[in-house]
Amino acid sequence: MSDRIEFTRNHSDLSTDRGFQFEFFCDRCGSGFRTRFQPSALGTVSGALDAASSLFGGLLNRAADLGERVRSAGWQRAHDEAFVVAMQELRPDFVQCPRCSGWVCRKSCWNVRKGLCKECAPDLGVEMAAAQASRTTEEIWAHSKMAQEDREMLKESSWREGARATCPQCSAPLAAKVKFCPECGARILVQKHCAECGAKLAPGVKFCTECGAKAA
Image (cartoon, rainbow, N blue to C red; front, side):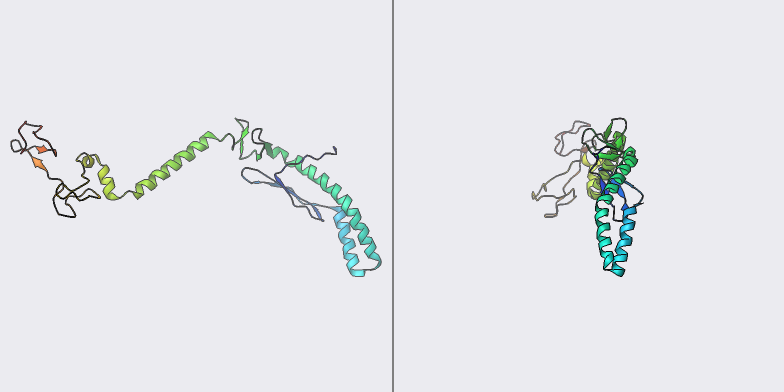
C-alpha cells in the first residue's frame, strides 16, 4: 500500500475511539453514501483499560496511560487503512468533472453523454421541461392578475372600437374604458349613423363609407 493517501473534499469523518465510519457526498446534490461502522480493536482494549482504571485506580492508571499512548499511534494507522478502504469502496459511485473539478454522484448529477457534470452540461430535456413549466406558471400568474375590464379590452371587438384617454367634453382623464365621463357625465363614445343609409360611422369620418353621403 502506498504511503500517500489520496483524499477528496466531499467527505465527512464520523470515526470515534470505538471505530471508523465515513460519509461521501455529492458536491452538487448533497446526497451520498455512508460506510458501515467498523469497530476498532484498539478502541475496545483502551475502553476496557479506562473502565478498570476508574474502578481500581492506583496501579492501573499507568496501564491506562500506556494504552492511550499505544492507541494514539495504532488507532491512527488503523484509521488511515479504514479510510483508504472506504474510498476504494465508494469511488465507483462518484466521478470528478474535468471542467469544474467537482465530485458528483453518477446516479443523478453526471451527464454521461457529455462526459461532464450536469452543472457544467445540464440535461437539455430536463431544462426544456423546466423552462416550459416556468413559462406556463408566469402566464397563469399574469392572467390571474389581469382585471376583467382589461381582458375585455383585449378582445378584438373591443379594441377595434377604440378607447379615449380623456373626455371629449371636459378633457378629464379616463382611467379605463367607460361610457360616461366621471366628471361631467358626458357620453364618451357617441355612435353616429349615416343619415342616408343608416350605416354606422366611425368617429371622426366626414363621409359614409357605405354610400358616400356627407356625415352630419
